[in-house]
Amino acid sequence: MRNYLLLFSLTFCLLACNSETPSSEQSKENEVEENTETTEPTKATLGKEVSYQTDTTIMKGYIASDPSKSGKRPGILVVHEWWGHNDYARKRAEMLAELGYVALAVDMYGDGKKAEHPDDAGKFAKMVMSNMDVAKARFSQAMETLRQHPDTDPEKIAAIGYCFGGGLVLNMAMQGVDVDGVVSFHGSLPTPAELDGAQVKAKMLVCHGAADQFIQASTIDQFKKLMADAKVDMQFESYEGAVHSFTNPDADENGQKFGLPLAYDQKADEASWQEMQQFFGKIFQ
Image 1 (cartoon, rainbow, N blue to C red):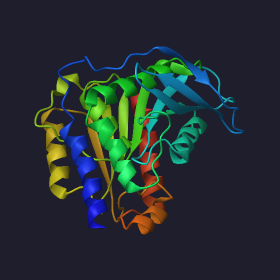
Image 2: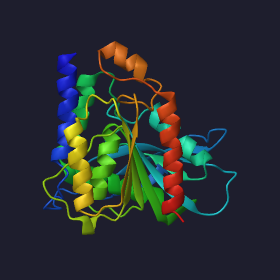
Image 3: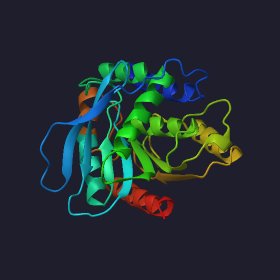
Image 4: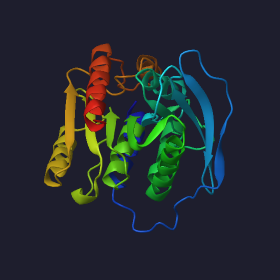
């Protein structure tokens, strides 16, 4: 268990340590291919796989929009856990579509890669977060893909993320990506040495498990102070007794299988989802 905890913690440290704005855009990946949709719609929502490409990598996402809704509506990016773009990320995209949004479950690893073991998950996450130019380019291309969907209001975009994805959306907001808001569920808390609050365009909602063993109390204090000093519009919600991955029903199985302190918490899951809806109601007024 110690080895897995160290690997997991290393991934979180990378999220925090690489949160500074990149000094060069030379490595930024550029769009070269039009989106392609490949699967049939689901019953409840118009859910389709979609490919989008940068100059080095093809990403395989999943976009969902309820066909019973009419008119343009806000778009939400969904960034997966460190396990990669899987059914859980797609399920959340469909849940958002049922609420009336257009949602894109993104692929940050490329080619739809998924990890079955924490060792692989850590390697995939490290490859992305050790090069923030690449991470920002992939996130930005996903955002452009979402904006181009015919049901999306391109002026109203937000992002949510889980675990790895939670830390990533906070990093993207800190780097000035033009989204209205970001929501982190049991994600890492980036704490760069400096933060220019003037460049942060997005409002933030952080949904944190109070018993999460991967986030130290000192990190929480440091993160809150950083946000306050930079005058970032940030709301921090803590759920008593909830540990890491509290929104994912698969957390219990993964925790037992790999000896990690992960567990699903229905109360915290439902409460954080409700907080997210209220947050979106405010930022999309």
